[in-house]
Image (tube, rainbow, N blue to C red; front, side, top):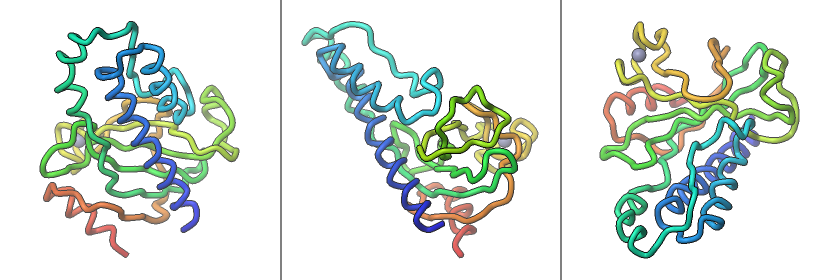
Length: 198
Ligand SMILES: [Zn+2]
């Protein structure tokens, strides 16, 4: 499992970099063609291209527009990667929940989203079958529950997370290990992170 954690960490760090490049390009890249190339690179990390970063770009930007959008574009930073937690799902096999911060990071840093990564070659339309294959892809995205800050409440079915995109994984299965990367600055999330030290 150590090797697979390393593969997932490399994959999600590469995605975080590409997602940041795509968000910046939306506001700072003069050419729509060049911006779209960066957006497509980031979207390719998702299993289903319809379910992706959601970043769009339609036309070239004038120098005045780039000046106007500069603060927004430069406000995007690569997300923090706090931890990766593995679960053994009864249908989908091993799923890796990559817990990350926001794309415009808060101070102190805090959990914001979970990218669920698995290995697959097939399209998401096979939902219900066990996912097989050799390609790491983002299968789903969850966001931290606004109502409970991850503690678990009635709004999120006591999981601390709400579904945003992709596969709906109602029961992730048995926890099968954690890789701790960056400790969050938010006190509540620090307690969660610390509780996962082995
Ligand atoms: Zn909640």
